[in-house]
Amino acid sequence: MQFKIDTKEKIVLFRLEEPELNANLAAELEKAVFEIPDLEDKNLVLDLHSVQSADEKGLKAIFAVYNRQYERGLSAAVAQLRAPLSAVLSEKYPEMLNIVPTESEAIDMVMMEDLERELDLGE
Image (spheres, rainbow, N blue to C red):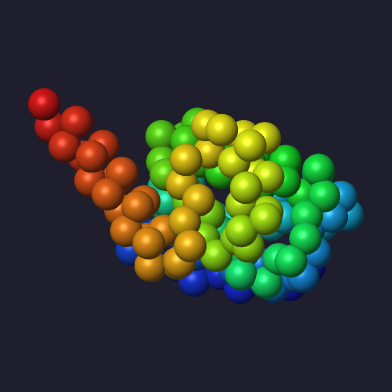
């Protein structure tokens, strides 16, 4: 599986470079993301610009990666997912709210959530 990782101050950008996210790659995606050491205390932007199709296990892997960040008290967003896949993912996992068209919107979204958490801690 091919991917690129870009680590920022509070965000890890994970760019999947595969045209198809099938059952074979789903487990690899989860493993690759879960093993990023910086992800323990950073938010995640999952850039899926290259993905043209995904099967059931592929969609489940996207949700697992997304959901794990929230279980840790952090944020995640999915960016640049093609419209048909975005619709299917939203339908299957309605609790996945952060699916946005661009990477910059995804960064803004996770940073806004991060700021909201910081403000809540101060009260």
